Amino acid sequence: RKEVEQDPGPFNVPEGATVAFNCTYSNSASQSFFWYRQDCRKEPKLLMSVYSSGNEDGRFTAQLNRASQYISLLIRDSKLSDSATYLCVVNRLTGGGNKLTFGTGTQLKVEL
Amino acid sequence: EPEVTQTPSHQVTQMGQEVILRCVPISNHLYFYWYRQILGQKVEFLVSFYNNEISEKSEIFDDQFSVERPDGSNFTLKIRSTKLEDSAMYFCASTPGRPLETQYFGPGTRLLVL
View (cartoon, rainbow over the protein chains, first blue to last red):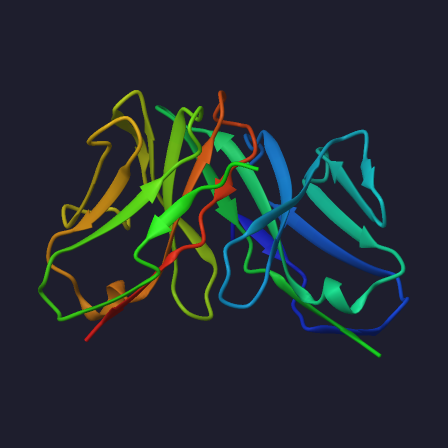
């Protein structure tokens, strides 16, 4: 089983739509969680951290369910500029340090 | 806003040659990382570095790879004898004070091994 699994893409949605991405992780020792955004051939950029209490940043809402090992991202009123690949990322401490594990990403295309 | 920088942006090399990829992490950050992303695939962890030593490495990070922080600002990844399968985008990242915090990524070096 993959350590981080995401919805397959691409998601093609019209501008203004609401879209939800899901992610599951297999290692219960994972301790911090993030959504990153990656544009084509660019570096991952932090979109938001994810907390059990849920957190919102403008049109973006992220939620973590530790019991189910499930992470979600909701984008409301999607814009053309939201078109990108969304990466679910988990972080855990290891013996000596820590390790970020990325999902394969879900591609979003927002269309007129 | 401070940024992680990487040089070069692109590098083409012949199989068997050594390459050094350079990174300047954000100045007050303490934890440093290298990742790679083969075209069309996911981002993969290579190594983490703290207090002038490797703190964690993946199975990808074999004896062909090494990292160094030669001075107070640069963080380098060396590939001793490149293989075709080393062709990828290599990202450097850094974190301020604790390893579970957000990592900030540099723009990457695209390495092509011929």
